[in-house]
Image (cartoon, rainbow, N blue to C red; front, side, top):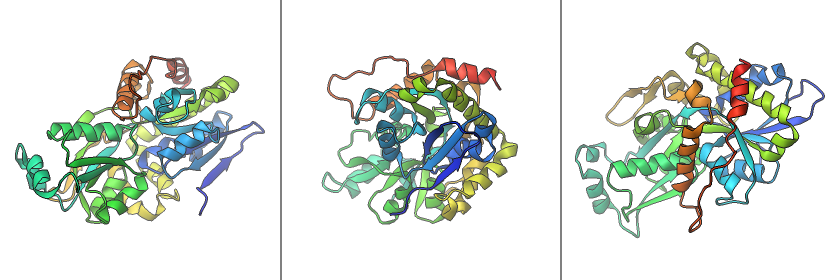
Length: 349
């Protein structure tokens, strides 16, 4: 088994900060902060480690193998409350991105069924059964992808249809499972929708921009232990990554961001599919050429980056949609979202 890529940067004799991320377009703030020297600029010693999926990020945060990570927003809350995992107190001082996801279906599902009001229901009843359901995948039960997929099913009046099965898969495995017919579609972050479409195995039926524009996507999640033991480092980390978010948002920098992502081991083999979502020109496949969505990725604005009450509400709903809450379990309001750290970071830039 090949170990995940690790990049180390030691600008000083300070203790290392171990940061995990998953190779997707919206890991850009982590990669940019490393490559542009923002970590160094703010006096940090950082090790970034690429992980294969969100379950691995969760386990490494829970077992103190990471100090912080690019994380699915609802997953950070789930870790904090012990939903589907051992509880580990967490802190979220920054939202790293908004939007960025798409729903791609197999070419075996014709686009024309969505032209009729109950076309999807009729398709399910003619082609599937309880024993052979249409299987759709999201990246984790505690994710915006899962919530968006459920929202899309609801809009198409099949949310509780007995012939539909929703499962979870790591992002990089989605395309292979679609190609081999193990699933009929998925909701995933870029570039995996574009990869499937350009390889001719699927078509995009909807995007997060169209379903819930501006929703919080990835967050900076740090363990409470790290936050309490090294508050100055967490403050500097928040500043460095907010600066990276600002850099990524500027479309004049997107070519440079693309060059950094293209060098990432988890993305090198699919570099031809990386430019689409960063440019806002997404392939749709099927009967449509492309979607023009300049805000497909939002890395920075005051509303997006702030871990405020609206963000907290959306992320709590994501955990509630996961199906992992124990009977009678409620998510109490807590101090995981640190607006004080965000506002301090903002004041430095």
